[in-house]
Length: 56
Image (tube, helix red, strand yellow):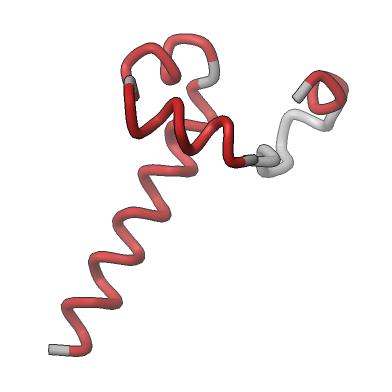
């Protein structure tokens, strides 16, 4: 995660399994520390829900 501190501000965050586990246990805390990661994970959830809905 430390290597991501110097990435360009407009790039997508690199989300590893640690971020995903943190999001599952405490999305509010993750969002406080890494709001861009929380937004990206929320987008993933929305896209997955839309994909599942389209399959039914």
